[in-house]
Length: 259
Image (cartoon, rainbow, N blue to C red; front, top):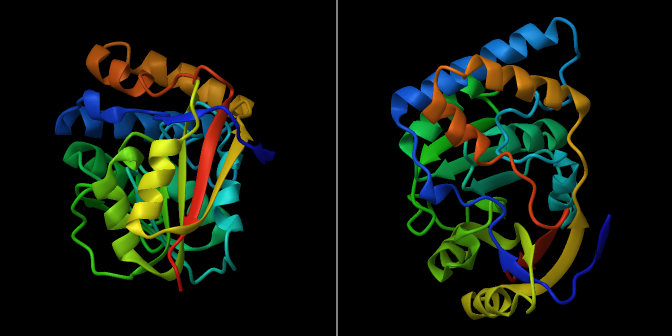
């Protein structure tokens, strides 16, 4: 459900930049996620678009809130989307499975991208979703490549360099979507000003209600925590994202590059 937002400001849903995981830890986490999902799938059907029961998404809520991202423009299966800050790739895989579009996920953390690639291969989604190590502020990508750019983990969205890069790689008429946490008291004035200064138009701000994750995820989460008990650092890194924001709602901002 989307309603006009008022009296809120924009903040990160998940700020992964302050937390680190090494290459070995990231691969051990990916292996544990694969194993937990395989075992659970013997008794519980995998949720649609979530081969790992949402353990790879970096968010604790139902991903249906992201359905709004494909509601801007005419969204067809040949769309090509970029997710900036893609983490372990669960959101990109879910969105690709839901929409049929191709997605490239970029993230500056090489160990996390390596884990995302492992999970992608095991899910047999290499043809639809790819991942790349890259800074959001300096994307090694050509101009006007993507029909959509998504920033779903907040944080970087308030950096003007990231918005300039999003604008650069979007095709003319392409759509930008940003999701972040609701914080009071002011509205998202800095973000909106930055979007306009970069050149975006048709800016729209909405508040979206966050729903509980499916029951199967809660079972998978408990099993993953048990599997990682002997790897405290890896478990702490994964659990850091598994928290609800202060409000059970989020801010979604939509904008468009002029045709």
